[in-house]
Length: 338
Image (cartoon, rainbow, N blue to C red; front, side, top):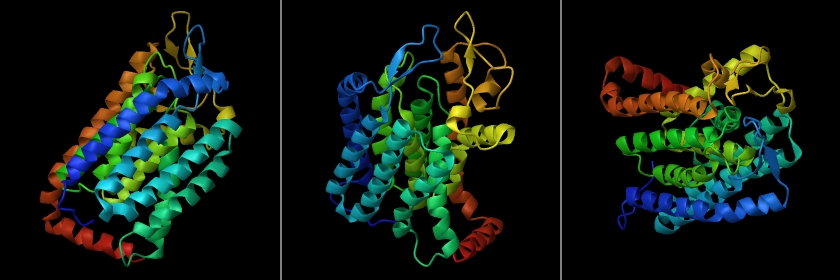
């Protein structure tokens, strides 16, 4: 864990980072949306009857806010400069991959490999004396986690809303466990997502694109490894994991152009296609519902697992004292050496 600076409490630094990242994203989004529209970086909102044109790649605004938040964290608590700088590099690399994917459309394999490479810097802040297996698992987790938050997407506000729920839950869990250091990272991303959500909620004025969705997962995985809260992060990401499992089980590894979008009926309600892959969104569409309703149903699932993650953080200190679990923890430490 990190050392603590006595000049300013870490939770207060995290709050300042969150507020500033929110402000930067919220203030910059209107101008960014106009720039994207003028550059014709736009897409159709296919889940509306009139199919309005909406700005794409709004995740650039999330990156802006996050960068400022992390810079402020480094300024106020320079003891964390290595960890925060590495996370900043990872998020920037993942964001660049997202921009390239939005503009050029990378294949699934290309994206996985590039995200793996982007996650390599996180190895430098791994715990001491860990084995090769643990080190390799870090960039693999960055690659998989980024794709997980990228896959459960497509409806107004669903990605940013789930990101807010996940990062909010993870922040609370880390505070309960006394891991104030990583809250600088989580609050910086959380603030940016809240600022972005105002423009992404129904009816959306901007879509995050892969530029925005990929960095959410990368931030969560970075926090999981640096703060050693991997179990809690796994629980919080279960909606995304379930969605990915349904898609892979029903259709294997698909390219973006192979996806068949969810359809809408004459009343403007979402309906499941008669054929196509399974997903968490289509699972909740047992009957036609409005887009806002479907998004709220997915959010409710995210809130449930977020609360589960917080509950684990509350009971974890007591559980660790259990002898059976203590033996498991020793076994886990052994696996770290492999």
